[in-house]
Amino acid sequence: MRLPALLLLLLYLPSASSAAPRYRLTGLGPVAYGDAPAINSRDEVALTAPMARGKGFVAATVISPRRIYLWRAGRRTSLGTLPGYGSTAGGVLNDRGEVAGTLDQTTDGAAMFTDEHAFLWSRGRLEDISDYPVTEARAMNNRCQIVGDGRNSGRPTSDDPQETKSYAFLYSGGRMTDLGWGVAQAINAQGQVSGIDDLGNAVIWEGGKARVLNGVRAGHGIIGKALINNRGQVAISSERAVYLWASGHAVALPLPPGAFNVEVDAISDTGDVVGAAQVGGRTDYHALLWRQGRVCDLNASPPPRSGWLLERATGINRRGQIVGLGAWHGQPHGFLLTPR
Image (cartoon, rainbow, N blue to C red; front, side, top):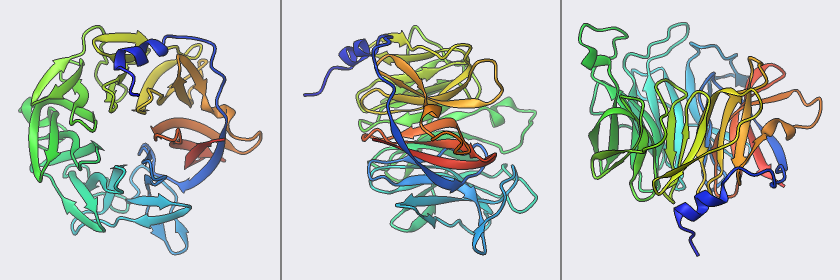
């Protein structure tokens, strides 16, 4: 029986009764700075890594050429790129194994983000789906609907502010639709799109119209997020707060002591939320899980003296497996946590 979204929300009222979950940690290998791994229900992971050279991967830098890889059972497969583009990044995937991401022109020693194009990889074929000068894919569902944001110009500055202002888009049925000013960050099975509008409000786009989620505000910047699941629940983050919204009501979720720069990155259909925050006045980030009204620091998962710091949890599937970004002996690596 499916529980109504509001009842599920009530189950997530802050509580200290939940035991911290236990996981088995699997390293996913080197990853690119800042690009979030994603996971589907088939235990496949899309991750962005520095391009392989010879028998290994090059050391990651901000301007290293990158590729999106599909990780399955310990093996990586590169999705490649298209002529004229040196890199692919920001991969998201669905339960059919299709991947969406962003093409850019970054090559060795030169970062070129002014001609980014959203792409779709399906059945071994990579396709540029962008109808606008600059687009970035951020999420997709099992109907191969893709959402993200774009701009009319790739120039970092412009005399015309409309050229560099972000607008949300929905790609569906081979066509890209402008949803209005903002950033589309998630899409569920029903085609509801969530994200942030140009005023920093958390919104849901449905039928081409934006509805502001009253009572919470995400704000601007990379930390502001509004992510919807298939039950219509929305995880929302601002700089110092995290909310779970459903059926017009929002509950503030607990934070670790001294947490700031809090960010959510994914929400499961059971309402589990993953993300990250700087905690205890430290500069490093810690990967976090919110479950049944309790927040857990996932750094309890790696064995002692393993060399791991789990910095950001970026995806969670229906089995409760979590993927994210971390540092292994000081180098950026991806991780997979599987419930024991």
